[in-house]
Each structure stands twice: as C-alpha cells, then as structure tokens.
Length: 485
Image (tube, rainbow, N blue to C red; front, side, top):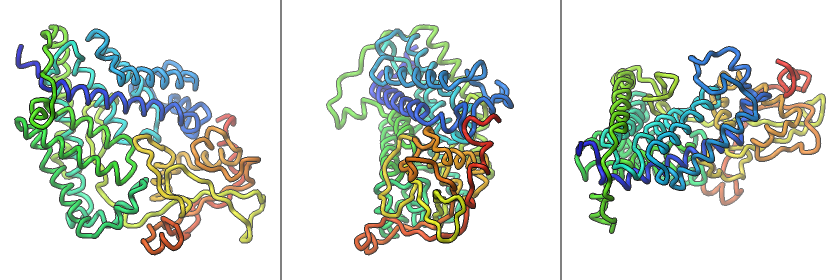
C-alpha cells in the first residue's frame, strides 16, 4: 500500500524520536535522583502505603507485584539506559520488531513510576510523555518509511496540546482576553528562570503583543497542521518558535521540549529542501504486513479513545491535563487557565533553640529552583523537573496542596534526612539537626532596574503570615524516616 508510507518525513521522524528518547532519559534520571525522599519506602508519600490501598486496575504498575527502593532504582536505571540507547540510534540498529519493543519497554517502565508517584507525578507532562512515547514506537525505524497514519496521530496529539491550552486560556482568566496576563505571569509563574526578570520588565505593549501572538499560535495555527505542505511545516515551525520563547522565559520541565518534538514530526524534507541542502529521501523496502496491521490497530485504538478528549475541547467545563484512562493514552492537555496576580512563597527556616521566642535567630533552607534568598538569581533547570520546588509553589497558593506531605517534609529536616537534604540547595544545619523548624509565607516581587543595580537583589519580599508554627521532632516523630506507619 503506497499510501501507507511517507518517506519524505524521514528527517522529522529521526528528530522526533531522538528528542523523545532524550526526554525519557531526563525523566528516568529525575526519578532515580529524587524518589527516595518523595515516594521511597521511607519517603514523604511512600509507595508501599499507596499500593496497600490501591489495586492494579486503579493504577497499573509493575510495582504491584513487588516494591522496594532497590527495584525502583533498577527500573529507573533500565529506563535511562534504554532511553540513552535510543537517543544514540539503537532503534535504527536493530530489527523493526526490536525497536518497537524498546519503545514499549520505556512506556511500561515510566507508566509504572507515574502510576505510583501520587502528588509528585500529577503533572500534565507526565501523561504527555507517556502518550508521545507510546506513539513514537509505531513510527518504526530505518527499516520502513514513516507510516502516514501515525504521522496524523502525532498531529492530532499536538493539536490537543496546543488548541487545548489555547481554549483553556480563552475560556478561563479574563486577562487572557484582555491581553494583560503577561503583566503578571513572568513574575508569578511556578519557577522563574534566569531571563524571567527581563521578560517581566518588557514594555506592556509588547506583553500584549505576546498574548495576542500566543492566541494565534494556539487557537489558529493548530488547524493549519492538517493542511497540505508546506503549510503544515510552517505551522510546525511557528509552534516551535513559540515553545523556544517559553523555554527562555521560565522552567516548565520537559513540556516545551516535548511539544517541540511533536511539532518537528510534522516537518517534511521536501519543504526543507527549498532552504537546506538535504539528501534525497531514503529508499525503503515495503512495510511488513504485521507492521501495517499493528499500525492500523493502534490507529483504531486512538480514534476510539479520542471521543472523550475531543468532547472535552468542545465543552464549557473543559478539563485541563486530564487522563481518561489509567494508561495515560489520548489525554486532555492545557496550562495556565488562570494567572496569579501576586506571588507568595513558603520560606522554611530552622533554629537550634529548643524554645524559640521573638529574639530567636532563624536560618533559612535554600531550595534549588524556587525563589528564596532575594539576591539569588533564578536558575535554569528545565527540562529537568524539580518536583519538591514545584509543589512548594502550589503550597504557597493554598495549604491544602501541601497537607499530604508538608509535615513529613519538616520531620525529615528535623532529623537531617540525607535523601531529603539532597533535594535542597543549602542546609543551614550541616553538623546537627535543628531543634525547631517553622515555615512562613512571604510576598515576593521582582525588583526594578534601580533596585537591582543598587542592592543586587532580584526579588524583594515581605512577610505575610505563619504557614507552619515552630515544631520539634517530638511533634512529628511519627512522620520521621524509620518510624513505623
């Protein structure tokens, strides 16, 4: 079947699969580096406790058969090694069936992690990585030309990501319709990057132009993806440029890079040859019958599962970042339906004094990514995902977000738990644990240019109220590592 193959997308497939493998690699390394304190056997939200109350059907995962921190490490390690192999081109060095199995292995391993990750893995880009990685398998390898059906499925996925994000904004906060959201967003976003201060201080007319351009790219351009070339390539490149702008302006884990990978899958070599000296399309052998049947079955599955997400796009009560099934296939996406006008941060401090009073000297814990010490310039961490820092942003919005894990976090600080301290940039009590820990809520604002030059401070902050009154290890001993729960 000649219509089944699209050899002119060989470059798009190559770039898409390599980028997706690279993001999988980062995700598995992220999991290996952070899981012990977050969801390990003695973590803040332990996996064994979660599995005891949740069945396999509720959260499909290999860990239902057995869980240990050692097995989690092995899972993340195998995932990272497989990702690295695919990034290096192993998918093209093995038979077609083996390439499919390598991609399937990544999906199974990461699904097993996400489905026991609880609050720490409740992010839209987890589902996006699982859906994207699962679809990547059916693009095949250098043994066959990219299948047309899968290329259309990738555009449908990209459409849901972009159009869903555009609709959730247009239907949500009025500042998106008034073109004023970027007056606040660069300052109040979850984790500002090194250029966020500069983006925040751009002229307001430029902020309005940014929002208007965003509406065009997210509400109009996605439809162009389904038009013939070169229109689809132009649409894909516009989306890519927009995503790179977002990469520069903040830290959104791997969301932007994965969207870029999806966009580049829609770029065909024939269009690029008009401006680049690309080689001729490879000469592929015909697709095996079993592969065509597999792709056809997968296409039918995606179409069947698309009813919920498609209906969601058309409803006033649009869901954002929602999975309609536990396998995280064919999901609903979106981001920033509402924008915070004010930035609050939870500042965590400790003291060696067992009975603190108003004269007590408190020393602040430093986080890697979230704003803390005003003179520290925001850093770039994305596409790496600092999960604790992100959850601290949610905690500052409402204590209810922190209720399941914050007390356990404090308990670990009170015993200098090494796994928890590894998630932080600075521990002010390296020799012995503090006697008390407290948390206070502060209002944060970007300084202006005059303040930055005069003081070297990127932020100014003002205390607002207590978030957690001083607690000792006696208050939270039942949550400390090693305590039986």
